[in-house]
Length: 491
Image (cartoon, rainbow, N blue to C red):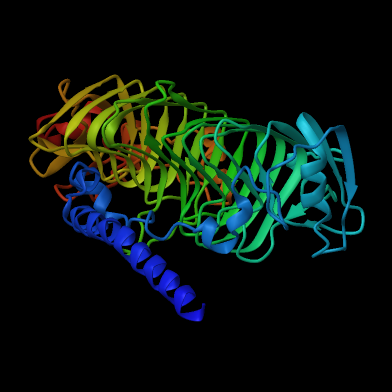
């Protein structure tokens, strides 16, 4: 009997090995093909974007940290997901980290329901995996303009974990709450995979290597929101997602907003937003850009209106997409706007930059009715680029200097020349102080007139004295007006 059992076991084992062999042979060519197939996404990436290190390979691996995060599994025991049935769930989890109280409260909310977070004893600590439409509200309200003076409800992420992850197709609304990830590591605070994140009266404090908000497709709509992101990554990274901001304040990050145009067809819109950078002047590492708009295959558009972008090496930059900037302010920058390739339309805005106002390497830029302040060069255009400029004004004590015209023998007078084809006019009065207060002055920088006036130019205009060929003022009280340009012996 034992011999018969062993024979059956040996036959079963041999049959199993014979059935598994074709599968192994099929996997080997597939594995070789996947390793040798070219990555066309990388080949089509614009060359300028390669100066930024690719962060896709270093994105946080959610499945490796907790395999049960995906919809369809209910932690901690696994099995099919059973959605909650409660319309409104109130949780008070402050001061009790590790209890999973806030995670359990999310599971109890029915689709379309509301979770109210009360955190009177401190921040609620937990990672919320939202896989159904719902609203999360902080009890007690939240004023983004006074978030350092009040104690709103706070949801804090565990170390190295995100605050909230949003599944594809899910709509999440956040109101009157502060999200905190003080030790985010390589995890973003909000991660959305094709979902819709709607924030109203929302605050985010994030410190880590990743963006405060990372959206892979879907939609992000932020209204009356404050984001303090201490990171070298952009504060908001929209990868194929439609981004809308209104009355938002973004600060702390080395770069402000990066948008990679996707196939949604809807333009992103940044309106009435303040984006402040760290003014990092280092010549290595990721570039410091206020708003970067990139595109790989899909031609899309981003509109920036009534927005202040200050404290970045590059105010706005375009790579293969279309960017429209109007009625906005760019200040404390080295280069105001750069078009690596693509299209830029800059109108009715004020730009203060140290080096150049608008530089176009390839593509097209339309620059009209703007004010440029403190620049050494207003426009730079490569031979591959198209530049359409008109009706711009410039305040620059370096660029708008006069020529010394000989009037009589060794007596000279300053003369400013304007070329009608250069697309701008130099201004010879002091830069308006109220405009300065709205830009650099808002950050405490001392006022600078940015207008070049020769020494004693006021007395010269009254008719006294003249200048030599080097611009040194020569005072003279004996002749006035046109008499200073005549020989005294002939009078």
